Image (cartoon, rainbow, N blue to C red; front, top):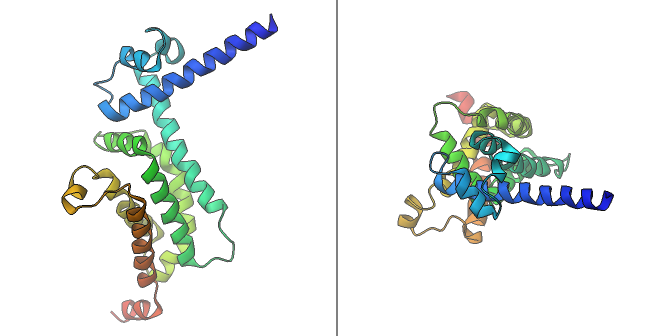
Length: 213
């Protein structure tokens, strides 16, 4: 009896995981309105009623998918902060942040698509989900921001925008430029480019010019 119960629990967990994976692909590719629970069930290989059994409604399933995707981003960035050397320079802290962000965006296309779709809405739960990651980024980049003479919030915004844009427009502007956003060579080049940008911003002579102006 105990073994049968354990197997049923494992089957339920496998079904739930399959639904989440299928739902993420559907929501990322088609959007919330164009995705049905039936489509998700078929993609997951489960009975039509199973997604509603686990998640009650399409909205609840979407919320679970969105929270899971954002959690992946939070975990990727948190590892970058945790792996940092306490003695690293302000510029090295920025390079660690930028490197982790670009690596994550480069390998997680669904995350980019889901957040892009959320950005079109007048109100989104994503802002709540991002709270922890933003606070960590502001704290990690504060020394570099101080050296550059700008707020850490501004530095986080600028770096996030420059890291995000190529992946958000990998099928629009970048093909016209002959660039493949997910090409490892481009990702490495972008890391170097953003690192060079921050190093230029934090040079002592630049800070002196800003004070004089």
